[in-house]
Length: 309
Image 1 (cartoon, one colour):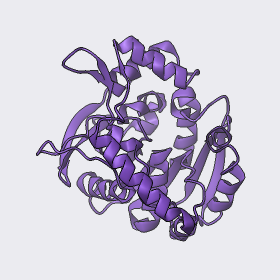
Image 2 (image 1 turned 90 degrees about the horizontal axis):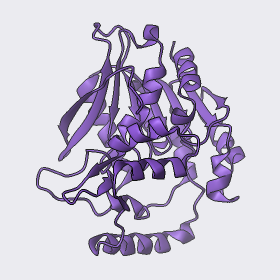
Image 3 (image 1 turned 120 degrees about the vertical axis):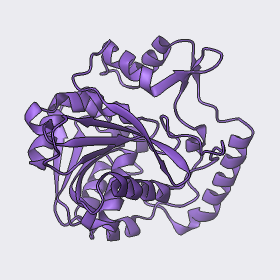
Image 4 (image 1 turned 45 degrees about the horizontal axis):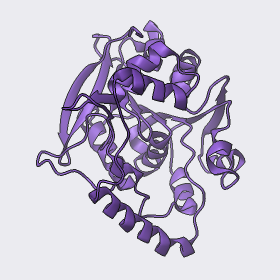
């Protein structure tokens, strides 16, 4: 199995009715640099960043605290103290959670922020809403969504209501696996570039055995429910214009946009949206897919180190 170069500390932060699970990596030295926050993507967990954290140089990691939370409903950030579990999720909650986490770990301080996929989308919006809290921002394939039309609103609300009912009827359960090896195989099927040793390590953090011994993914199936709100490109672009931090938009050489959206939304359209960010540049990681922090952690670490310097 993969052996970590840097061990994380696991802790829980009570916040907004949930115990938020947070991983921290620290050299033990007095922090001389702003904290570096790493926020993960949809159906992922904070531990997903381990390979990239291990690839950072000692000089970069020294004197810096690295902080990665499990988003609500993912990893070990799941149930409220009362045991109530959400039957749908609202995107604005991720921004509020991030806001509270920054207040907890870096009160009154501008931080460096890295976000992958859904986490990249959260990071971009947060940086425009709270520009004073972000020193530099790295967006890893947080492309946003295809443009919507007002005529889609009624249908989307109906989809959301139907989805909530499906959760309550137990129809959206995530697949379970007989052992951790089965989870690792699932991860490698999704990402063929993921090596067996990394897949097995990640599987042990991405899933846990239940009372019957079945390994279950650490994600609330309610995340499958379509958002009740349409994605409004004009609103996102207005927020992008408020970002004051320099932004590094990192893409994988494998065009995941073409695979996902089949022409409904393209990489060129995403690049047009980036033009609304006052200070943005694009970098490409070769021989990598959407999970580029798994595929090429060393190359990605070098990019991030140079940008944050």
